[in-house]
Every structure is written in structure tokens, then in C-alpha cells.
Image (cartoon, rainbow, N blue to C red; front, side, top):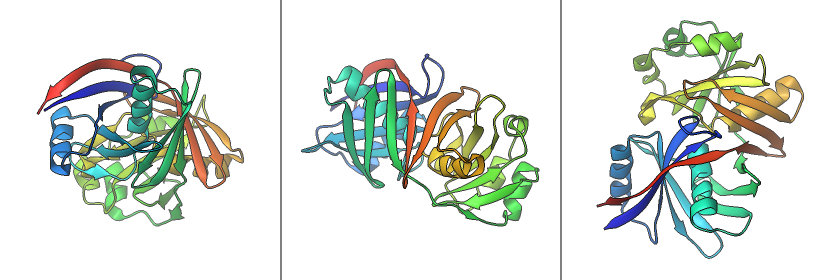
Length: 260
């Protein structure tokens, strides 16, 4: 069996920036175990698979270690493939996923994700979280799947060097660290060793937590964001009712074929 595969750098306007994702269009679903093996072989933070439906596409995402319920950059990458390589004409794509209906709208070079907002609860940081970062946070929150740790400055976020073995002891998918930005509204980084991702370069789904937090902190609903990983990524975020609109660009790295 031969499958078409694309690799796309998401949340960037240039190659070798943003977050790379593999995208594999399917005519019908293949076994979950096979999709997981393909994702592990790709060894990217996410591999997205989609299947056409009557009015959109069913969409699933796999890290090298597990299937996840929501992924922003691989959704952006899948939309990029449909718009730029598969001649999709409608300016908006409907994706049906484990997180419900997600849409992606094309406006010139920008793609805008419409995702569900995460709900955060302030918590006392677990001791292992404090030990992993060796930093005293301003505050700590818990969302549906991740911890959100607020630090004092952009420099603290950039210079943080967490103990990943300790982070694996947390009962969460990952940990977001964030602070007010110097030249943008906020910056962040994301670590998910429990999902096989030591550090994710740019994490769209994390911004479903970051956007409502910073919208409340800064008293504004339209926000600029940088994920200050080594590759880096730029995002425009907007709080819209109980949804988060996350905009970014994407570029194709390669188009190829895998043989199973």
C-alpha cells in the first residue's frame, strides 16, 4: 500500500521555522496501530491523518507515542495541504475530531483555526513541577490536559531548562510556561515528554489555554504571541465567545510517498 505524505512547517512563513508536521490523506481509515507506527517512524511531534466526509474531513493526530485529542499545528498543516496541494476551493474547511468540530479559514496567506477554549483552574504547583523547573512561578493553573505555569519574564521562559524525567511524573499531557512578552503580548514554551515530545516547537493547542489567560490579564481579546523554542513560531490569537481563533502561516517542506 502506498500513501501520499506531506511535511509542512506550520506557524511560520519560511522553511526550517515553526513546527513540522506530517500530513497523510486517506480514502478510508487504516488501523490505529498502523497510524501510530507511521507517526513513530516519522518521529515528528505530530502526524495528521484525514478522511473525507460528506461536508468536510475526519481528522486524527498522533505523536510518536500516542494519539492526542487536539493539535493545532498539524491541523494548520492539514489545511495547508488541502488548500495548496489538493485543490480545495471552499475558503473554510470543516474538520471533525475528538474535540468536536474544528474549522480552518483561509484569508490570503493566513490560516485561522477555530478551536474550543480551554478552562483553567488555579492550583498549587505540585512539588515535582517546582523541582523540575527550579523556578518560583507567579501562578500555576491546570487545564483539561496541561499545566500552565506563569513566569516573571520572557527571559525566564527562554532560559528555562526543565528536568524532563521529573515532568514525566506529572499526571498531565504537558506543561506550558509563559510570561508577558517584550515585543509581543505573550511568549510561551511547551514540554510534553509523556507524549514523546521533549519540547514542541510551536503548539497551537496550548494557545487555547494561553489566549483566555492573557486576554483576562491584559484586558484585550486580540493578542500577538511568540513560542520561543529554538525554531520559534508567530501566532495571532483572538478570544471569540467560548472559542479561540489562532492564525498562522505554513510552508511545504516536501511531498512524497510512503510504502507500507
